Length: 116
Length: 112
Image (tube, rainbow over all chains, first blue to last red; front, side):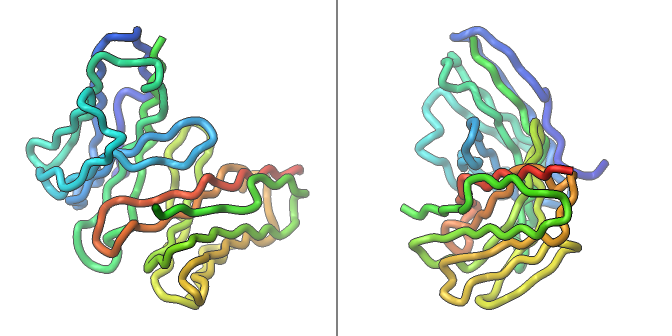
């Protein structure tokens, strides 16, 4: 399978714990995005990378959130001191970083986070 | 800020019927994207539109980029049960940003 993959698919944690999610983009894509989706809503942008550089962060990304893409391939999203309001689906997407299809983002299956 | 408004919010139709949904914005978009999402999965890209007035098909799906650049339409012909899901329109905040703005979705249910 050559699509975007995310791990884990589901995560249940207790409030105050730290969690980390991983995303592996489509191999030739140099742009990688993180979104958050809550029930009944469309995905909301969190941050994106061009290769290893983090180019934009949403104000939704509080200090407890950090994302990395150290070698320009896979990315991790860490949430520290989780809160119940962090419960959501975390989606990763990737796209080519140039050309006319720059905005055609391909999504992974998501990681469903439940904070108890 | 930019927002995308989708209508209708939900549809319940009979198998074989045609479906139309739309997406409007108060701002101009240079690209319109249509995604479908099924429960527990990520959105799947259906159609991308790049020019005002453009009409693009993908199987039974046809999408149009509105002439005003502030709206887009998605039609599904001869619906089948596997068309069930949530359909989202999306567009980039500006020409080269990585940020997509999504509508709130149109939920489609198809009765066999």
